[in-house]
Amino acid sequence: MRAIEAEAVVRYTDEAGLADALSGADAFFVYDFLSTAVPGAWHAADKLRWLHIASAGVDPVLFPGLQESDVVLTNSRGVFDGAIAEYVLGVVLAFAKDFVRSWALQRQRRWKHRESERISGRRVLVVGTGPIGRSIARMLRAAGMSVAGVGRRPREGDPDFGDVYASSDLARHLPGADYVVAVAPLTEQTKGMFDAEAFAAMKPGARFVNVGRGELVVTSDLIGALRDGPLGGAALDVFDTEPLPSDSPLWTMENVLISPHMSGDFVGWRNTLVEVFADNFRRWRAGEPLRNVVDKQLGYVPSETLRQG
Image 1 (cartoon, rainbow, N blue to C red):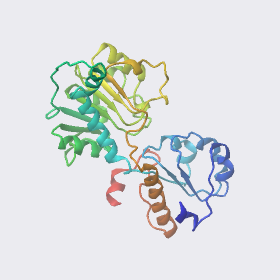
Image 2: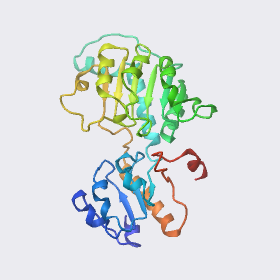
Image 3: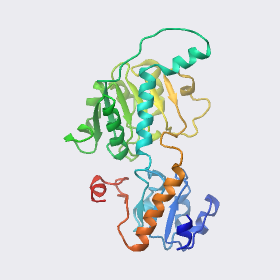
Image 4: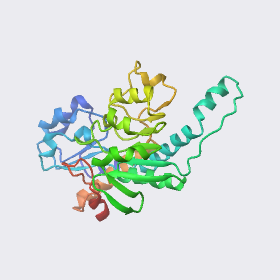
């Protein structure tokens, strides 16, 4: 932040002091992207023109006051794409090669031969076709998997997904997938999209991976699908309540891999987030177009804007 401090008055604050810090501010960098304090302090944003959040998801700041204002919203899209794709490939391999059981048997000093699965040729449905979804698709294709996407608009011949199906047709395409990866942005349309009906449509033994938002999933329905079928397993990096409560049944399920919202957090990610903001700050001061401008009604950066950038 030193370069920015040389050009502007910078106020650092926690949630308690946010309203005072917002008063008179022209730009607002939400570094704590999990904070829910912005709506409560919004009344003090009397001069604000631009808000940047240090995440790809913007749901913590996408409230009516911001949506109805003239404040430009940008995000940190692009920072976590490759890291999350590597995480997804990692958990796919962990399931297929039964690494979790191998580790458990190793600790017991037990020699138990098993056969493992191939991932080559397995079918993956990536729900969410933004840059993170595309990075996932490219990495899984490179590993020999067959990948399709689910997005707002259906299309054929996509360079990363091949076929993209409309989100309204999700239930039709779930039965053919060996792995379903959730990476859609959280909107009113996607909230709770993975419910009992969706899980019931999946093929027996399918694995579910969530690296999007916890609220995409009805957790009780997921637990039921893991206990009673058809799901063969789940890798979960995000949850509707974080930290995941200690009494959640997910902790003790043998077919569940849990990570604490860290799939994109590579060594150095905090500095990279500040660098993204600093680049946009330079653009803002120079009157140049900002990168990653979010459509505040859609809740994400439209693909047309990305192509122009």
